[in-house]
Amino acid sequence: MAIAAGLAVANVYVAHPLLDLIGKSLAFHPAEIGFAVTLAQIGYAIGLIFLVPLTDIMDRRRLIVGQTVLSAVALVAVAYAPTKAVLLVSLAMVGALAVTVQTLVAYAGALAAPQERGIVVGKVTSGVVVGILAARAVSGSVGDLLGWRAVYLLAAAASAMAALALRWMLPPDGRQAGRQRYGKVLRSLPRLFAGDRAVRLRAAFAFVIFAAFSTFWTALVLPLTAPGSGLSHTEVGLFGLVGMAGAIGARSAGRLTDLGHARRVTGASLLLLCCSWGIIAMLPLSLWWLAAGIMLLDLAVQAVHVTSQTLIVDRHPDAAGRAIAGYMVLYSLGSATGAAIAPFMYSLWRWSGVCGAGGVISAAGFLLWIASGRFQQ
Image (cartoon, rainbow, N blue to C red):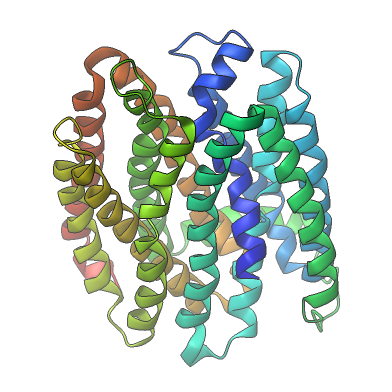
């Protein structure tokens, strides 16, 4: 399940090291290319609202396999996109179908014993972290050798293989499908979200941390491939591997959440996220500072993310799909916001503008944690 989740989320993030190649191929304006990431994230938000709630009324194994097959089809459409419009629509479809990640997280949490739920969710989420980071490394290398379209064909082949493996290896759902009507489940989503202050707070944290995360990763390729830097897309992609600390953070955060330390983990991680931007801003001095900042940023983001998902599944075990969907809508909107902000800030003030934006977003998250302390777990 961790491997399948990693492959699914990688489909959304493979574009990051390739933005300049895609832009040149399809004549995007430099300030517009961030929309390639933004549309994928908007598609993800749509999928969260309309697809993830199916987790609570359908056979989850069948749902996961079906979405993975359709992801392969959408990736082929991206690979052969002849125009900007076709590319953006296809990327939105890829984003919408990538929500199988949340179905996998909800299913894993449902299968786990309550006292081990944080560890299990952390393990699956660690696969997501590895998928995000490996996607950048692989897409950069393949993009240099074969072009950006080959990257999406490779992702389509991986999704098709994942569908076969999931069909063979996932445990049976063990429940009757279709007990509730789809419309009723959709209508219950906003009520569930509005009626739980803790879920709303965790969703707000998701918006902040992934706006900061997306601001950094969307903009990173721009200074590293600019004239004078001289890095190839392969080398840019390899910086993603530095963020493997996020996978470690995901597993550790789940363990600490099971022990009742969710609030402390959240606060410490948000403070760490703020500090990471000061180190990332030192990129012009040395790439070593950049590497250190990436480690801290990814560690902080994934620790908050796992803590939040574990708490949400604990609070709503019978409606985990809907609860996580509401939470992840804010995650997706945060990612889309960061993807839109990053190229704009870079065009105005270069790397210092990107770091300033990321620092402000992160500081807002830490202030939210302080202000809402009595509502937190």
